[in-house]
Image (tube, rainbow, N blue to C red; front, side, top):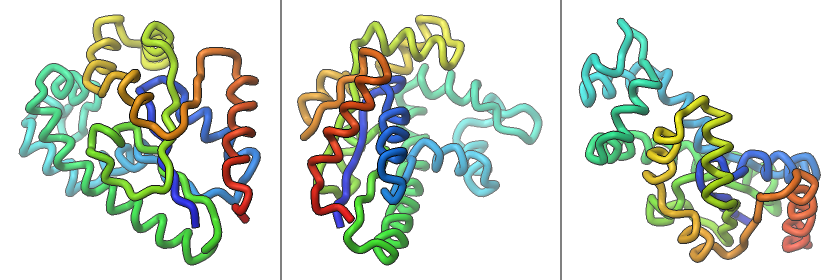
Length: 200
């Protein structure tokens, strides 16, 4: 069993890179931390904890207002830390459960965890290798503004809440550079998979 972490900055193209890997090798095991967070934010126990932490300001009636929550946590680092302290252990636990299930089915397989905040959480996801998907800061801002309909100021606030992408590149074992056309990313996915010739 080979266990990998793919990380990077927001809007650098981690999901697209993983889509390319999965298209080439559908049998790869995969856990998406962002999807896990999205699911957690719908669960009653988590939502109740959020109301206790942040009050009615992040709710519309009984419904969590995710845009309001985002504004609160990116405007106040202490609020962001509280949110992370709530969500990160839950996400890690679900990742471990996903890995355990996959390792029974494919004991010689390849399991990839998509962990955007891997370095920010002190590398708390076990792995054999870490790959960072990176691009320039300018491209990152443009993609995030376009994708999430954010102002440049809001996009910068989100990006700056993460470790600088240059630092993630320095700490990684492998760099995936996602500045050019998607075909170049596809080529890098092919090269990346060649690192694991024993993967079955």
